Image (cartoon, rainbow over all chains, first blue to last red; front, side):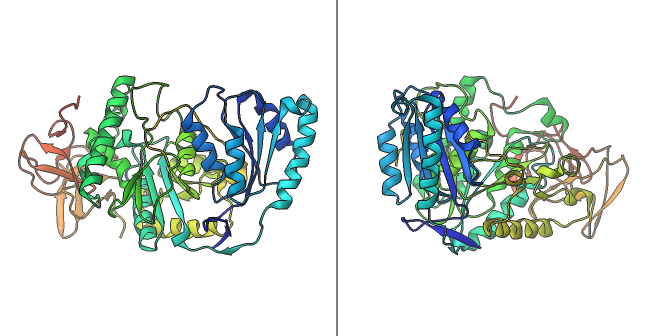
Length: 388
Length: 90
């Protein structure tokens, strides 16, 4: 495997050039710069809101200084509340080439696009392209599920769990998430906590999620679940929980907090304080961005019904639980777990396939979503008490 | 050896059907032969041992609730004989 060494000692598996729109009003210019640029690793991310939000600023800082990112162009309208000088300084301090384009100070759309294109060239020329060896002990990997069905908890999720166990044995860092899908598992999770304090925090985190969803009127158990053979809420949650494998849990992370050391972590995506700004997981890409902001190099996406999304910054690797879905959407699916159901493949063999595929992706092989050009991103408004 | 069911954890007392089974069908589980006492659909649970009323049903190696009556090997395990341990369960 090969990586790109950054000033802070971390290594990335990709070398992206990010164009970052700091408010919706700057997004057209930012998008136009990306579209008219012939460098394949240029990607667009951004925050659309104008009102200030500490979480969004913190997330953008962590994304711009992610180990998969080699250089950054910030695109600002000029009057938005996002603290562009703070971001610029943080990126500069991280040793990455960075440019700041303020549309109001550069003569509007056409002139800003032209200047932005020149700035991209400067950033590109300032980036480091030397590769170094990359080991599993350098890897931070995350997992999420979306478009789940009855097969998710039978094949893809346990396959990811076993892969997490294998990766942890090799010194990697693994992150699972969505406390809302772990309601009913809080005591099983707490039993795997490294210490008493973490035990308490895990239970508090899951209770917070349960309360948040209660207020939002969200019901996690549907009639379709029972038809598919799921009887209880703890059984449904365990299907999702099985993605976390069996290792001891080393800690809880919040969006934008890097794991302090190698190990297994739960990412808490549920905001603190009173319920506001809507659902905590508004779409899968919001969770993917939060995982990436914790330093995740690569995302294992478990799906039964099928999903097509990828992401800016870090590759998304689809682990397909359902053999029928795999057949229908094979262009989008990286790993087929359906053989466990059709009895053409053993569980262990699928886990081995996934592990060697991860190794190839870390060595530069494109995932399906990368090959298809998926570069979705999403950052919303949130509030967390914990900050770096 | 491939089979039409999956045991998700060695400690489990249920397996999950990977096909639609008919009533009376026999399945081989290790050295045991289990006769299915009802029709059991894909994705649903089958008891592989005797489970007394009140005992935990184990799937993924963890309790997913408790038996509300005695369950025999080959029984379909679902809402009629299994209840959540969480008080807020509908």
